[in-house]
Image (cartoon, rainbow, N blue to C red):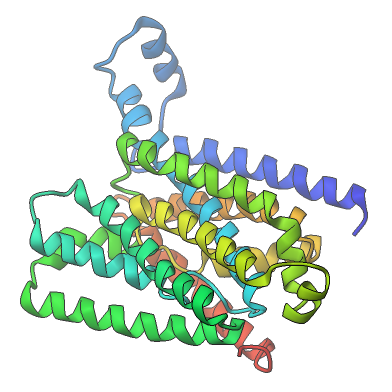
Length: 330
């Protein structure tokens, strides 16, 4: 596409995200009365129900959707380009399973320490990618081998989760929102913990976009152009872990964001990761904010977890990709 078309897409993505954020702040079980919010803000009325809903519920939730969506979509771009696999994503490499395992274990061992769950999720994601990173540095695993290692890690961590639930069945109650994926319990404190890591990860991803372009040409081509493939792959894995671990720490195990958005953006903008990474971050943010808003509205006054809605949307898309790319899956 030409530069003018790219600019139009960027403008549409930015506008769409802003509109969805405004709708996400406004709509819900209670439709926000903006004049009342403005009046309470001007008078400093901290007891105003409208103002409290905005500051302590809607705003953290929308910002959480923006950060989680941007992080997961950018991680999806990195993993797909790095592994040369159109179906690669955080769940494929066992990152989600690692986070879920440590969350369940923390909920079982410290049931009254809910503040530990975001930290456990973050450390679980880093643990999974750390294992992959070690294997990559020592063994120089190929993209296909990394996918297979990810499947093996997912199986191991899932077995660990089953063991935790077998011995501590009540652990699921404390960790349910993390395992399903939800923005209902996002707090400013959790966002403050995760936001610096996500922003750092996004910045590093953009800086490494050129190296990612070279790597996506193939290992032999990248090596012939002077790239240290093993070091670049290790750095990209670490960035992906940082992004996913930080997003999981407050949003839980949201699935398919890192799969759906990169494919849509690649169709619109092409395969240059210098454009694809920031565009996917915007698209991922818009997708999660929109999905969370729909999850609140579809069955109001009851609320559906955004992770369930994303899985319902992503499942058919995943099947479509498998059929379309059946010769490229491994």
